[in-house]
Length: 356
Ligand code: SF4
Image (tube, rainbow, N blue to C red; front, side, top):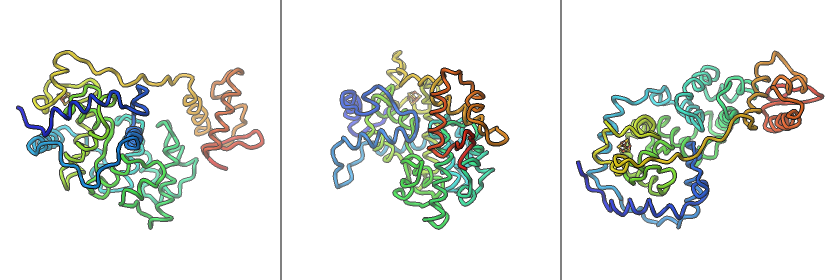
C-alpha cells in the first residue's frame, strides 16, 4: 500500500541533513535514554533552532496517511497494548508516579515500583507527609532514588500551592520537581484527558523510522520533525489511547531490533526497505559501566541504611557496603554527598537513612 505524504521526499532529506547539525548529546554520539532526557535534548536543540514562526506551520503529513496510521496503531493497541493501572484510572497522581518511575527505567520494572509507592502513599496528601526515610524505603532498589524525593517534594508543593491537587496546566506542572515535558504530558493526558503529546524514546524511534526513514532516529532524526509529526498524528480527544499506543508499539514492535515481519505498518514504513535490504540500526550508546561506579556505591550505602535496624557507625557502614581500606575515603565522600541531598544523615560518627 502506498499513501501520499506531503513533501515526503523533503521529510526524508531533512532527517539526513541533521547529521551535521546535531548539538548536545547527539553531537557527542550520545542519545538520551529517558523520556526526560529526550525532552532535554529537544529543549537544547530548540534553543539552537530559529525562533518558530508566529503562525502555525502547515501540516507535513497527508490526511490519508494520518488516518491510516491512527486506525492501524489504535487497532493494534486494542489487541496488544499494555494495560497499566495509571492509564485507565483518570488519576493525575497515579500518572505522575508512573511517569517519574518510568524515567531512566524500562517499563517492565516500572510496575512493581509504582504499586509499592501507591500502596504506601495512596494519595498526593499521603505522599506529601512522607519523610525522606519513608520515601527511600518505599523506593527500595528501583534506582535513581532522587526520584522518590522528587515525587514527595512535588506532592508537598501541590498541597501548599495548588489546593492539594496536581495542576492541569503544562507550565505549572513543569515547575514541579522531577517533572519534565514527558511527565507533564502523561499527567495531563492520563490524569485529565487533555490532548497532550508524550514523546519518549519509543515514540522517537517509531516516528523517525516510519515517517523519516531513519534506522536509528535518536541519532538521525530531527527533534523538531519528531515533535511536529507527533502533534499532527494525535487524534483530537483521544490522547489517553493514542499516546500509549505509540509508546507501546515503539517499545514492543518497532524496538531497537524492529520486528518488521508482521508489522501492521510495514507497507507504509519509510525505513522498512532499508531494514529489508539488510541495513542495521547501530546501537545508540553503550551502557555506562555500573560496576565500581559512584552509582553502585551510593546504592550499596543506601541498601545498608535502608535495612539497618537503627543508626550505624559510619565505619561499620563503609565496611558493610564492602569498601576496602583503599576505597573507604571515596565511599565516605559519597556518604557525605548523600547527606547533602537529604538521603542520609551523619553526625558524631553515626549515620542513618533520610534526615534526622
Ligand atoms: S516496518 Fe519495521 S521499522 Fe517500520 S514501523 Fe514496523 S517495525 Fe518499525
